[in-house]
Length: 217
Ligand code: PRP
Image (cartoon, rainbow, N blue to C red; front, side):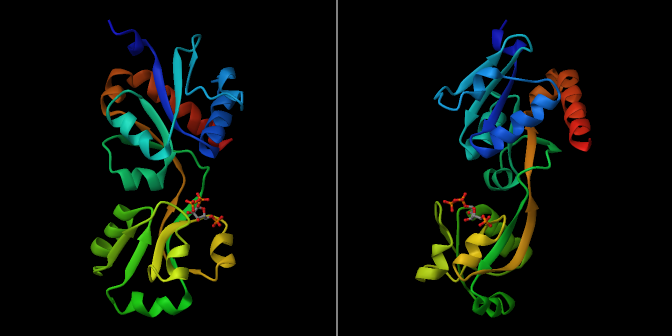
């Protein structure tokens, strides 16, 4: 029998989300001391007592690991889940990492959104942008994929607007941009591999219940 099947394997999006996830897990007695070493470059950690394994991945890769079943469970932002469109069950809103997916730009671009003009939209999230404009607003647009600092788009004249995450709004303010339309609220979510949900049903259901209870306290 495959040894790894005795373990519940978690893929966590590297960075702030992973730290907040571990804090929540600690509340329900799931710890992984090894992972707390900030200087470590290690990517995979095991808690032998709990028969759990954790690995740190780039956020957009988390749904991929979960779809292929090398991770039973993933924790990642709703933005990434929507963008990656992988097969997995989304089972829990973890309540942290709250922000919004928005269409942003200079106030002057508002008109273009109302009159369904063929505008240029820059985004790290081309699938979310396409779905919003084509399927919800029925507006034909040109989508330009960028990999970060998307706010530059309208400032340097690459695009009319952007589709991006807004948390505090300070990046927009400091660059003379504003939220023009809100697409949806975002937060960290737990996703589960579809086969694991059946094969490890009791263990996973118990985990979901305990996390939900800890979050409500
Ligand atoms: C994100 C997002 C915005 C900013 C929003 O970028 O893309 O640029 O944070 O946060 P705020 O509303 O609190 O200012 P991130 O810092 O992840 O870097 P990136 O632009 O390189 O993607």
